[in-house]
Image (tube, rainbow, N blue to C red; front, side, top):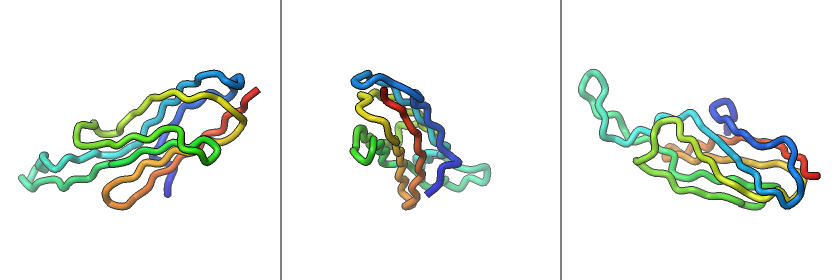
Length: 108
């Protein structure tokens, strides 16, 4: 698990019941297997297949990603601020790597 390759933007504070926007990005090549390097060798497939966001342990968003995503995929979605806590973000790739990031939100 690593956080250095991920960036998330979550409001620091929100009112209870407020709809908040969450934006996140992960540094990842998202190779689809159709490109070739300078020596003419095919670059192997290396994709993020699943993104999950949990709010205080409860899943609030999930996306299945595929070959149509550009490198360094960015996602934006909304959820409702229910209580002070932590949002956990996970990106799962086809090599078995999991990149994680966390953000804290204070709900008034």
